[in-house]
Length: 410
Image 1 (tube, helix red, strand yellow):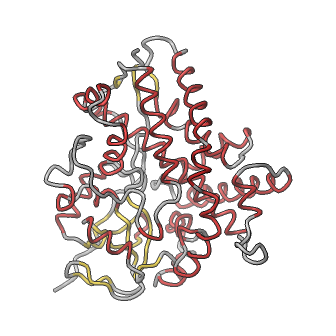
Image 2 (tube, rainbow, N blue to C red):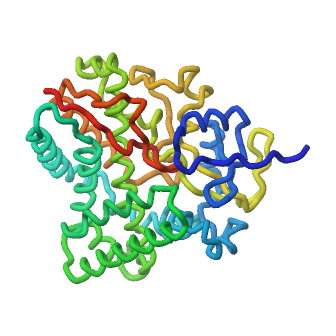
Image 3 (spheres, rainbow, N blue to C red):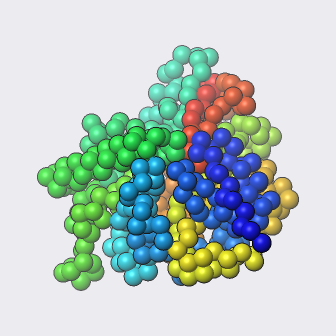
């Protein structure tokens, strides 16, 4: 039987939910074509994706296990992918290398340190809400730009000691990094800007060390204090991972939850009435509208069998969090519907196994502070435009709203 041609992925992410459903109808493992013609396998079922994420025969190191890696750097149309898989941090490490990096970095993100951030999160939340309250009555406000975006950006920048004057540029380049519609030359320029900016932050913290996580990462040693540490590339690329992931994913979590509640007023009423918890809203949002819909890439170390389909050794695998979250076999026939009252089930929005996101507790903590505070201040909050006209960010990786126009009704 002839292998069907790869299914092109929409780089604009115009309708990620419908795209995931179309792929699921084709099978559990479907060959797709990402921007630039990069081939990969999309996994459309929760259990199949979970099994691959836990399988030691699935790698995140393209240098070791992607058969197309030797040609990647020489193809201009593939430049966008290098910022995701060509870096040297926990996101692109495998086996002993991953264990080494995680062992060095994980102590920096302890539960104790996350809890100490709560006063900072509450202060920033209050300041942003006060700014919103000072807006002219009845004027539409882009809640993404005025609340969902600056809150996690300010938190992560305080956590890592990013100087005030560098923060607007950090926000700009991280948004550009998530855009999968950029021309090759623009994608390469964005990545160059990011690496230069992060290098500047590191040099600033070397000259002005403080009680922040960038200083901790600069000074980190293995537990005997004598040997292993992060080298220059690992340090810079780790900052890219933790600042980018610690910011952009929480922006989308907050925005997606607000949008879901405003478009499901019956459930919002239950939440405000106390019969549905904010924890339930956050977990349902992560399942139904994960901040990262598709994460590039993993690689087959050996031939893998997935529901009767062979993924050959050296092929790339797209981590399809959105498709898994909408899988009826895992979440029921109404998996495509937002329902914060449903019995909670396992979702994969923060990954699973050795690559589970170390920043997940902080993202949940920020959302659990931001959401109830917003609706307590503006219980009559509503969308200012027809939901059908509100566009999502131009990305097949990130799932979030480009703008979130609302009316701030007390």
